[in-house]
Image (cartoon, rainbow, N blue to C red; front, side, top):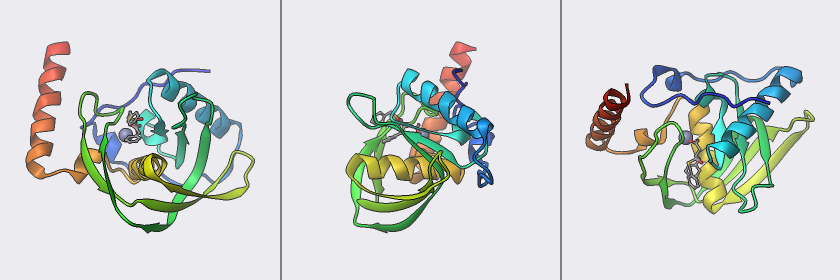
Length: 167
Ligand code: K2U
Ligand code: ZN
């Protein structure tokens, strides 16, 4: 297994739209395994393939306290959403930035599992937020894009300053 480097905002590769997985083969299984290892090590509760510069529709999620409920979603799509919730979000691609984002309270997501079975999952609360956050990544969207333009400029300036300091 391997740890994968995570792209940092505002890297333009984070804006690429991921393509559907046609066949769940050993390459996809290895990618999912490496993504899970990378997510647990970060640590995070989700990771999209876009964030590791692989532009395929693959997401891993584990919001459990015990970190033992890994969910791998291939070609996930939101087929129902309703309600509203506002939660503070972070992102492994935008380190040190946290802000409140409004999202649907409930989502119904259809996806394919690693055994090529079509599945659906209904989620509310944090899991619903995580699913929406990760599926956003597959569409080339980072959570800061839900914030005001002023906040986005301040975030870009903050991250650019950090990059100069650490260069
Ligand atoms: O996509 C990512 O960068 C992973 C996020 C997913 C996430 C963001 C906001 C809300 C839920 C999930 C990371 O896991 S950010 C770290 C984190 C950890 C616990 C709770 C919230 C955020
Ligand atoms: Zn993220």
